[in-house]
Image 1 (cartoon, one colour):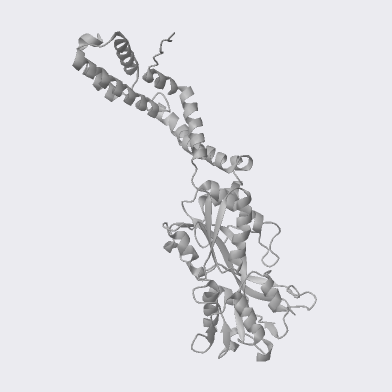
Image 2 (cartoon, one colour; image 1 turned 30 degrees about the vertical axis):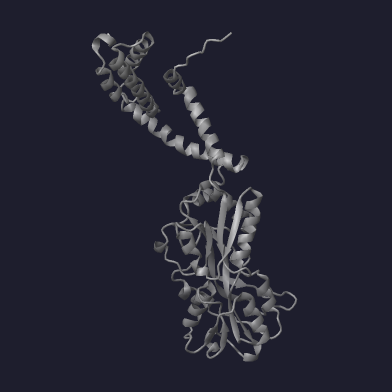
Length: 427
């Protein structure tokens, strides 16, 4: 036996779902759609040479982020001055980079900072056989390892030597990378080397207690830092006596050296959910006790050379949003996105009501009007071909006319369409 087919009126169904149940269904559907169709969560980090601090930091971030379900790719770039250019370039796939260099923020409108993660002291090591070296100016005519051109270390070395009256006309700058600089110093291939590395890097400690190698005490650290500060964030770092080698007492006295801020930078339009997890990675890697050298806790909002990202600003003030604390990333991000969509409606709703709009979700009424228009056009086509409407169509047309007569907004087109029907049909 054939069961009679139930005819469900599509427009009635839509009118029903556009009420409160409809709002809930649309919200739930939006959350599900966002969760299932969330874009690729691969994060690309532009770092420096493999043996450097930027790269080791990127690896630490990768370990944390991959434990949270992200994919992380690290690009090793020899030219560390270009990292911010890669981040700023909207066509590149680089999401995150590091800066410790001269930067004019106006040249990087698509770049924002997530915070300063450390200060890198400027170390000048020299061979003891040179005799008494009291300042970089005493290295005139010497061979100095200063990293390849295009690196932050090379830029710092050139600026440091320049304020002491030295340049490539009276010193020989050799483009050795970090490990090569250390080996060249030990082998006597260079007379001195300039390093821009965190205080606790193993290579710094190795050089500090290597026989025949001396760490230069930059006696005017404060003055040097001020002269190097144009376009940079500089501080003076105090290295206590014996800090680098307690047994050997290196350095032999408390010394002060200028240090440059290292800032994490990201694309301005990066997804807030991903940014929250990067900020957590920064806290995991760099958080904890204050730096012994600067007395400052990291990551820090102080000293960023480009504007702080608004997500980072909110994070440092208020902590992690509630959703990201307790929900998986994609679900939390989907709900957070929907919240950002609904919040403006909750704000403008009362204002719209005061203007005569009866419901905050007035745009649903306009959408419903478009559905009625489609239905009424079909009715007009029926009249053109048959000269009349069915009983069911007449009931539906009168129902639409009744609802439209009670609404003030978003139904003007429906009123115009109703006026086109013959009066004898509507009446």
